[in-house]
Image: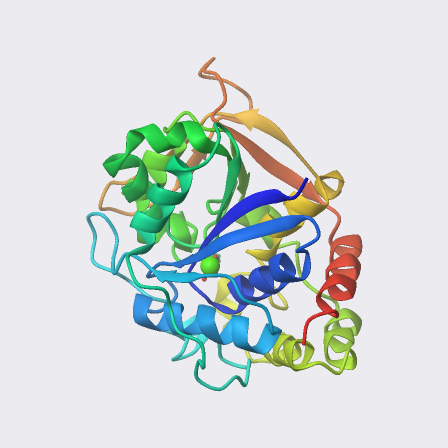
Length: 308
Ligand code: BDR
Ligand code: CA
């Protein structure tokens, strides 16, 4: 049986590659919807980007526009990393397809309410605003979630600040709501995603597939990147979430208590991970700490090559 998923996202190059992988893996994953949230760029643009991704891939999942900004803080975006439209290097035209009517949070609530208990996986690739809003507005829907696989946080250094990873930094209150929702969580932090870097040879293979999708991925993974972000090459952070659903054997981790700092200071967005269970609390997340990037990219390249 295919796993039912909702992708919540702020495309973003790495979000785009994650969505391509999910669409290509339709034999394993049923993408019920793609919910755009403000993050890398404002939500009007992340929504347009989700549509551009569908258009080039030649696949269709309903796209919904979601929250315009975090629960409490002003929105901070990341054009300095992603470029003015959030998908620098992709070389894609504006969208042809259009978003669905209605708000992404309403879609999440409606879809979960109609589902069986513990039957839908939420794939969180951006700030957790939409998902936190859904849980706050309709706490009953939490019972319908099988698990949430999150790209966010870090076991050690941050990227947007010394302490914090971007998605948690942008909306730490939302991250805290989600991590304390009592739902199984798998956490892909920077400690893992900074290892998910395609080799030059693998990047070239995306283009060698001679598809529009492959060329756009090649463009996104060869664009210039600020050196201050703490990695050599482009980490394909968000693709780890979808890869985990498809190939969990390429990852391992440990159940830990994870709390997110929402204070308005230097620790904003920091994820504190009780790796050694000092607090004697039950874990609220499976924190991933090993990955096999070479195999992961080899499989992803092959899978994505079936798209247009
Ligand atoms: C995360 O922040 C975004 O810029 C990426 O798309 C990813 O979700 C990495 O910190
Ligand atoms: Ca993202």
